[in-house]
Image (cartoon, rainbow, N blue to C red; front, side, top):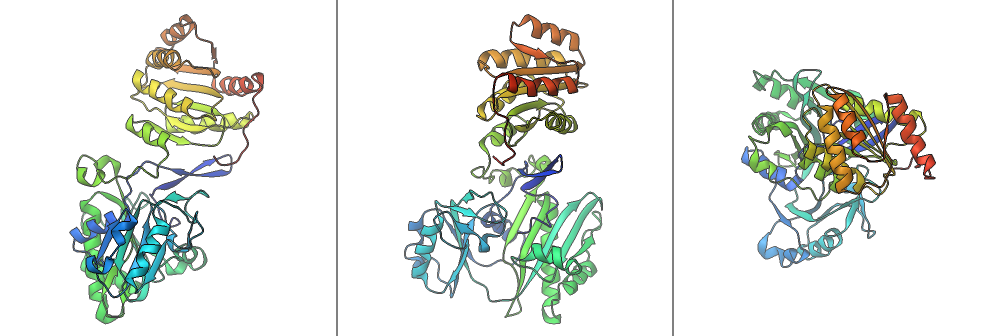
Length: 432
């Protein structure tokens, strides 16, 4: 799967003082095997497959799943599997064999081990499932995706006649081989558009109509499951003239969860940061970073500004945590719980501007959380806006060792100085 071409995906980028942090963002992602079930449901052509979670399920495979050639694929939420390697030294997250007796040893080297690819951290991702599929005789690989694009105010098809594992280099070195096709959200994909895309993908006359049919079915899936992205890499042409979606990646709109309950129940949290999972349960937007100053802020813009000014004064933010505009006392408590569960956090800065948020609610939450969690790290608080005087009074009367700041600049200075006062070594800029 291509991270370069992804406009919305599992990994986002957080920019801070000319540094780029690869971060996990909250969108439902399905494993390839789950995505292929959805493709089948909408009539999209895929190869036969089974999924195993235990190597023993691959014993006596020929009696359960007999094909001429097997492709064994590790199931993780990251691209570049074929060129990846495992923590046990085994090379490649995708393997081919015509001998069913060789499938079991391959599965054993995958399940329970971590796969490292160019889209994962250096530690890799644990493999809990392996898909065993019928190998297709691929004559040519193309790249096809549909994404929601704000610039075009709707769906856009991104296509390339040069698909496969090297698609990111195609985008970088030969960008003329990638083309976008905006789609009118009202009209959808017409037969003419589908044929135009198929022609750009260089499907020959005898397979162009088949490719156009697959493209229309993929768009039908995209709309009906409330997807933000459907990526097929490769959309392959076989030597028999068939058009098959060999690999699939689908991302979904979180706001459509109430409509897509069955799909969202497939969400696999095993690869996610536990703190990010916990934050999502309480409608908090949290991303772990690599510093030692925990931040609790309301509003994404203010959160970014807070992190920037911390760095300006020589500190390192440990996280991005936006509690949002409708935060309640319980969410403040949960936010503190998440912050203090990170062993790297040596001090905390709360920076809240009370527009929609009631500062008194934040203050009550801070008091309850500090007492319940027996907070031991320095705490700097800057509050401004709605009901701020009542909030300050609550905090002062709480008897808690809170350092107050009148503005953001002062807050940043004080939280950085709190680390120096405590004799804590400043965090390095290495990724956690």
